[in-house]
Length: 154
Ligand code: ADP
Image (cartoon, rainbow, N blue to C red; front, side):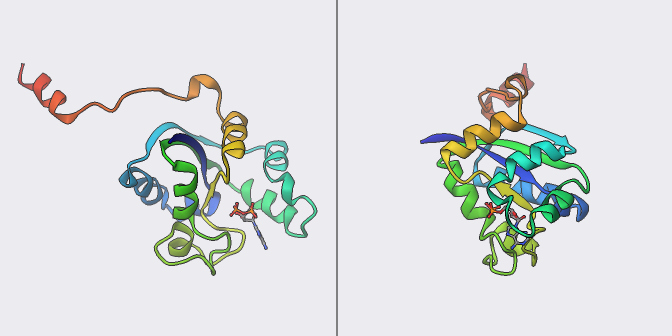
């Protein structure tokens, strides 16, 4: 089933200049990027986004980390994209995530784990609304390359 999900490429990945590598993985898998922007996330938004962790001792650390520099936000569309991006992200803690997953390949940390991916259809809907306005999401058809070449020849 075609779904949409929210991905955050987090500050550690921005600092390590691996944005392209991560986006490339989603594109290669066949997912369609229908929204993409950089944003320096505000404390109030992060408190809402991570509200389920507010009683954890590491909560202030997450907010500080996520405020340390801008993040890259993506809305991805594709078949079963919520489940598939969670599998591609790997387990939360970088040291436990399997090699081959994004966290498994790029992180050894509990906190600085390169990406966020919505964990359910309900979260995805809420999170896309949290970070994107309606006019920042683009509905389009991918153009067949043969059509592009045909235009070329004219
Ligand atoms: P996920 O991001 O895999 O959905 P959670 O919602 O449990 O996992 O956690 C949100 C984020 O909080 C994690 O991605 C990570 O950045 C941070 N985090 C989770 N557990 C810890 C921890 N034990 N210590 C520090 N940061 C953590």
